[in-house]
Image (tube, rainbow over all chains, first blue to last red; front, side):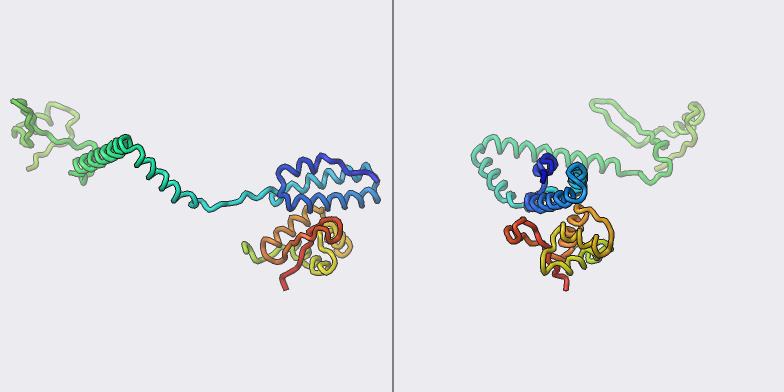
Length: 168
Length: 81
């Protein structure tokens, strides 16, 4: 009566669920003994190895315990609150800085999106332009009023002027 | 219970467990009984995998009967009926 080779189960032991491991090992050993009786040691050995490899199925692997993920949340909040209280100076600088930065970003975003929200209904928006007057005196001033002949002159002198129209 | 329907092999193995569970319905015994009754070769690992699937689906319960028969085997118990 010979023994089955050790190494297949040694490899198994590493990642196999310990409860299943006994089961599988016992059954394989019993099968080995029967194979040895019917086929002899050599073939039994080979069959043992083949069947051990066949056991490499997903169900034998150790099941990772799934802890619920929100167990630590309350503790994290507690610890961060204590840290804030402990380093009041830096914490307040950080908090004030972050909130200031966020406020600025949000305000700039709303301002710009407000300014970009006008006159968007035109069909060929990317090819439509509007003339304005920019006057530089003490400070630059803008007027939405242009001299009347400008439209015609622009259309005559520049070939990229497809269509010109006045509006009020 | 993940799925409640069972496949053909699962059914055959569940029936075999029902035949054997009064004595010892464990991997090797089920494999031999299957060969004896249905005359089909089935590897021991397939039997184990099917048993675990059946347990997951709730048709049977695998219990550890270590020291009962000396070999330290886990016996399957049919709880479907």
